[in-house]
Structure formats: structure tokens, C-alpha cells
Length: 93
Image (cartoon, rainbow, N blue to C red; front, top):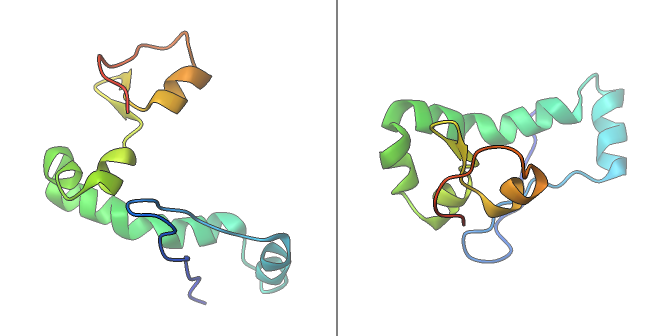
């Protein structure tokens, strides 16, 4: 089974959508939402591994926004806000 992911709503905006009815259908077929998420994100993980962090981030704003941590510091503002006691990078997105 191949699980599709909706296209971008706005420029450089990436979403993984799964409605409850979709989760039920996946479960009936012996699949889980975790498998759907893996199907959607694995190509990016492979690309990151092949290119390295700097080249991956240079591919575009959407790629850069996908980064939450680097060198043990939170780089994404929303994540930093959710975890105020963890180290932050100097600049937030």
C-alpha cells in the first residue's frame, strides 16, 4: 500500500494529513498511521543522509523549516517555546 500526502497548501508548507476515517482504513488493512508517516518522511531522511545537513537545508525554505535541532540546540521557535528549559540556537525560525 502506498499512502499519499497532500501537496503544499502554501509555499514551503509541508503537512501530513490523516483523518480518523483514514486511520480506520489503514488499521483494517493492518497498517498504522506511523507507517503512513514513515512513508511520507523516509524520502526526506534518505535525502538528508545523502546530502548532509548543510546541502539539505540549502535546498529551500521548506527544508530549512524542517530542522528542529542542530548541534544539541533547538533551532525552531515553536519547539523552543514548548521546551523552554532546553538549549536554544542563537536564531529561531
